[in-house]
Length: 95
Image 1 (tube, rainbow, N blue to C red):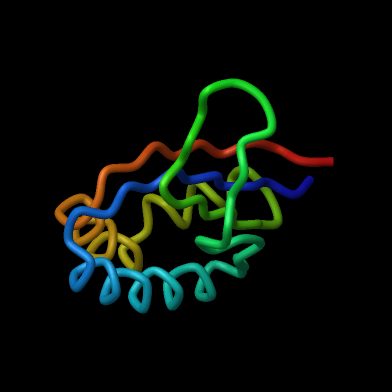
Image 2: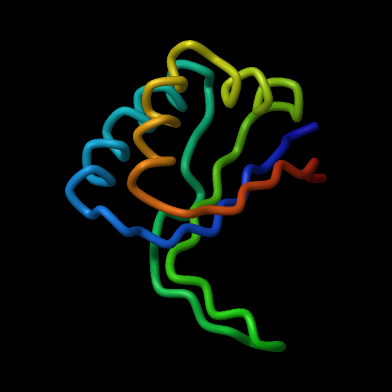
C-alpha cells in the first residue's frame, strides 16, 4: 500500500534550504520515493490553516517512507533542514 509523507514548512534560511532541496531529492530517489507536490501554490478551503510551503512525497509503503526518513542518505539533509526551516511532517498510508 502506498504511503505519503506530508510536510508543512516555514523557511527561515533560504540559502541553506536550497541546498537541502538538492540533498533531499537525491535521498528520496535512492529510496524509490517521488514528489507529488513541492511548494506549489496552496489555498485554504476550510479552517484557518495557512501553510507557508507544502511538500508531499509518495513511497511504495509506510515502512519504505520510514526507512527513508531514518536513512543515512537523508541524515545530513535532515540536519540542514532543521537549521534552515521549521516543519511538521507526517506519514500516512494511502489507498
